[in-house]
Length: 485
Image (cartoon, rainbow, N blue to C red; front, side):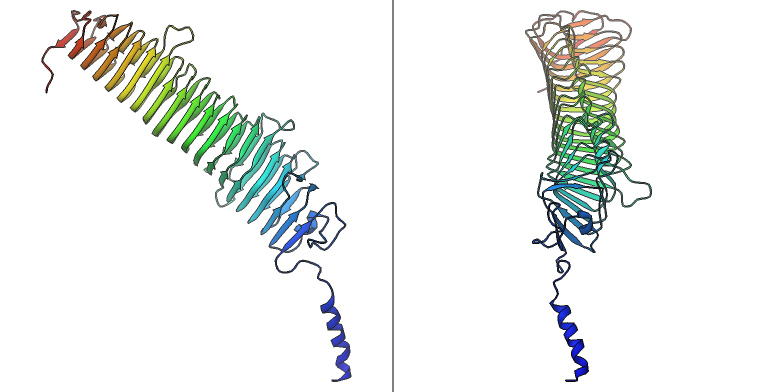
């Protein structure tokens, strides 16, 4: 070997024997704020998080227990993993953002504390087992792309301004693409958020297994598409789930308290399993809305009714409404179809009124319903409403079992009336009542009560009632032909 090559060989051997300055091709780094600055290996972790994030990626950064001051900016391809609640990311400036994430990033097993926003993101971003606590403006702001969160906890504590605070804001940033979309699973919002989740500008939201304890509104949706499944909301003062000009699907959702369980306006609504208890106004208040509602339960709603339906086109199947004040169902304008329902114990606060079905200026088709123990009318059609009722069981109706007034028309067939203290049938102010196959038992009031003014008419066919009072009124017509076999 030439002696001239010897120095080059010695230099090469020395270089190869030096320890590496960064982890090998796995892209893993360890950071511990309490450690002596090392090289980023598990045995000799870096001391500064910023130093780790400045390394070329993609990276998996393991963050030890401790408090780390931000702001933290996650480069694309970075996965930041803490040690659970003992790992805290925070900022000293109240209005600063704690974490900014752009592109494919992930945040896991730590606490994000304080700041204006906890996380500002443009997806795809994944967030797992993270607690957001005491942000002034909001916990997460998603401006573009998808964000998927699992096992997250959102806490609005003493440092949060409840008047403006939001848990998660999903809203497209000017010029950003793609449209933001949120998937949130098995998570919890606690405290006085004004809106736990707010979706705007055509955003897409899916919430699965999410609970809300204390936010004024659980979901506020303005346009776009939202799906909520296995959700629970309680302790709020506003509407639990609200949509304006959006498409909302609710599956297995329960609301305790709140002003309304659900409100909609110019929207599409699909419900498969919904329960509202103790709403201060109404269980559901739906305006200019179309859709299908199935398996709905409302208990102890306020004086706006269990179901408040306005200028809508809706079908409600398998519903149970208990203990409402003022109304069980109040429908104004539009069209409504009601199937397989039970309405019980409707009364105003003073105990002198309260209607089971209150149908006003609406086209209504009602089949297979039971209405029991109402202080007013079990079924009332008023103000030019046109209602068709089939297969109804009505009992303990205070004012009337079936009532029409102000030029409304009610066509009823196969109606069983029991234990009613008021009139069985009531028609006034040019209302028209057509009833076939009526059975009335234990009714202490008149069979027919009418003022016979103007176009007021009562047409009866196949009536089985021991009490015949009112049949002789001039505007009452009884068809005595026998029932068809």
